[in-house]
Length: 99
Image: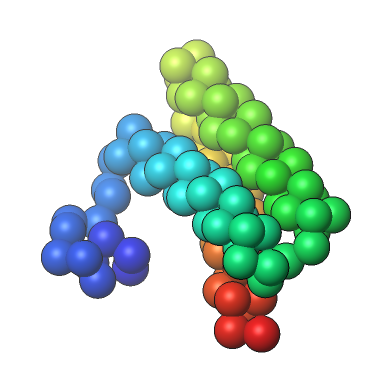
């Protein structure tokens, strides 16, 4: 959905989805720093968000390892979990930006 809104083809392969999720992770980290600088979130909240992005990155790395080992089912599950976390974090940051 995000890609399409920018006029880009949506990610379809596992590798494309993994790359997109890694980009989302970096984006959330940047948005968190910006929200903290703007006073939209407290330091403790920013630290919590960054910890979750660290965990999401670990899931993405584990997904890459699982895919490399040929275990696509585990890889897709880890990618899906990381993506869900990142989408929720993006929604949280957008909501805090409006407050």
